[in-house]
Length: 262
Image 1 (cartoon, rainbow, N blue to C red):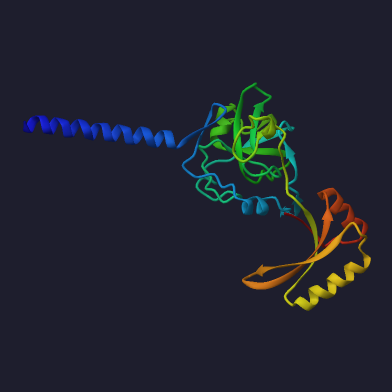
Image 2 (image 1 turned 90 degrees about the vertical axis):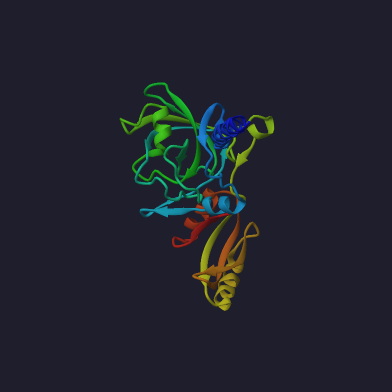
């Protein structure tokens, strides 16, 4: 009887070990249309993250303007890949970079955009999720993870001519007609013309611009914090695109003003 109990406990222990490993493997693997990716880190997809990562930003003195994208949009250019030097560090959307996951960096596409990447040099393709910003070298248009680079046979060469096709947003491939018609974009564009610790300075600037703006635009005071202290930002609103805001800046000699996207 004791022997039977021992054998039963051993059998139960073995079943537990194998079931636990198998379940963990299933839970940590997801699929983008048949392409596996690591889900050990949860996808960050909050509205606040999107607002933050869709704002204009500056790298090496150059401004970049994340903007609208649609399912089916195509880009062609040069791809590179990044790996060990960035592994386990934070990406632009706050996730932890895993060079073994099927992800990539892009300068302007919304975070969690799903992109098909075709290597035009050898015909191989894969699917990745955008969770970082870059690359900021030359005219490269996408920086693949090490795993994605291997999937299209470019990890040894380092660079490849590629075609990108947007398949979906928010970490999933578009399947329904509504999803296929979706456009990912920021909702509004502003021009920041001043930032003041004292409200009175912001109010003076607001009144000044109210006198010269046409009916198409408005001027607002945006309250916030900077270095844990209150700050009052003066924004011009009513711009429907980055191009419109940029034209307004140039035509009104607002070279030092900043375009904000929210």
